[in-house]
Length: 304
Image 1 (cartoon, one colour):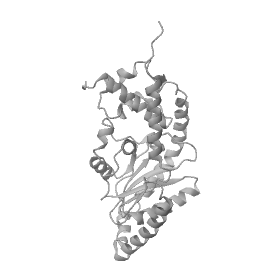
Image 2 (cartoon, rainbow, N blue to C red):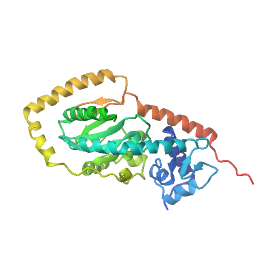
Image 3 (cartoon, rainbow, N blue to C red):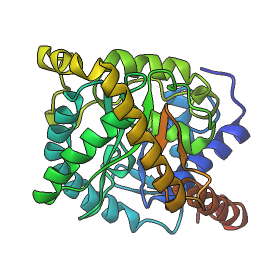
Image 4 (tube, rainbow, N blue to C red):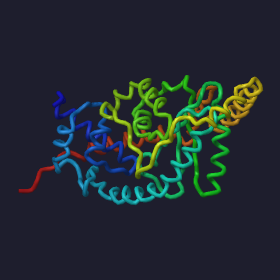
């Protein structure tokens, strides 16, 4: 057993459930343990807190804040939708993984947690070779156009090169995104990225294991021979000029379109487009829920 005070552990469990509640997402006991905020507790300690039914609501295997039991049905419905989306998300992820200079592809966002709705985007985080991020992005967007014809909305909203895998923003939201993302290819790069972002353990100290591929799907293999062959002409000097041209024109346009969002950032090594300020909205919604928990979600006495 770890040396964790009961008060701090209880506060952390509430915080963990409140964060998930922002996404209308009840948690199982193993998920509460994995995403326990800021405290490294044992499975037994977490289960002991969850066993007190005066503090939380439990529906089947799921735990919620009191009064939020209806989100269990929301999660079940979204899980069914995610199940239908995953096959295509994995297939297109494997296609992207075979593009020149792509070194890692991971599913992020709502689909990574099986918490998506009809018509939602498939979000990817992509790691590329240095000096070819914007070339890669153009190729990925070409794949996205073909996917659109099949009714699949691909959103490669976060690309970094292998020089920029140590993320500059340290927050609970970013820690969750890293811990939840499901790598489809480039496991060595994924492991290195987790190592470089060791600060995650300050927020999610139990989220150490690599998430499994859902529904029996397989990860992509290592770089193919065709991929290596395609990279040869794209290393020529003319390809350098093409990269600079694509970077300049896209950075100008994206910066103009997303100038109001501090979450967006564009450079030779990073293309981070978050026009809806999602991270900021999550922080605000979490603060509201924590205030509600503090005011009204206190332990209640059992009736004799």
